[in-house]
Length: 332
Image (tube, rainbow, N blue to C red; front, top):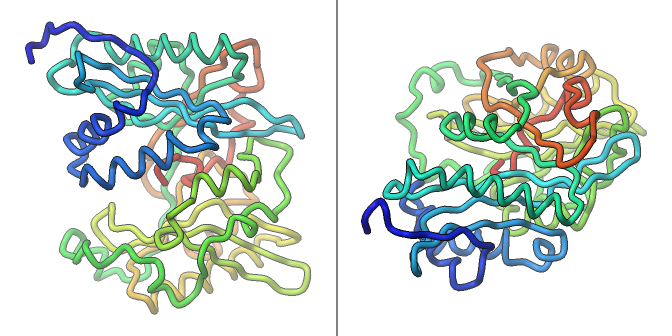
């Protein structure tokens, strides 16, 4: 199809889902059927429809040529909940790039969300899409930074030479259990900063079908408790255990550090080369247990960007987003 073929931008309809999966397969080299199943689970679910996902699709005739989505991502601050959504699944077919399709989808997303009273968008864009968001008046709040705890230095040095096909099953961890949303929702929220609401319905939608990939680890003693979602990955070329938000109850830095060290021992015994997490400008109460547990700050990664949809000065206040972590990213 020629580059100047006519197209339109519209909201997702069921017949478009296979074409969206094909576009993802082309871009990310994934199985189309698996991509379609994820799209249906994520965007064509009861929760997604009720909570107001926005999925914009570019179509040229019956061909899907672009996608831009906004998923319900419920943040709270000081007891106030927001109608907030995370940008994701941004794709434009190579044959149609250079025609400002991405910018047009952003404008349409702004229009829909503003007209229905949503509060703000947020996201973690890849470098290629970052300029387009900034042009659309999104604001950069800073980059998350990796924190790494080496467990097997020789395995780290041999990165890229592992068997990726057999390294993703978190069930091989000696410590941890199937992720139950009740566990994640049981920790009290942090009122002083923006934080994902511990909403059980949201967590069930987000993690549905992923308990073999994302697991739950907890360390408790008397009234003190530390819990976290963990995920095995090989995205950096070695077998790595990613740690999500470190949730605490009556737990000081030393107790949190001991939980991380116990988890590290379990990961080491399971053949993991390193543990990692990513944080935005962490508070001392967050980075001090990481340091005590042997984590080292490393290179920056993806930026956090936000776009208020009405007058909400707190949304652009950087200090209110400190400690946002890798688990906040919709693809984590």
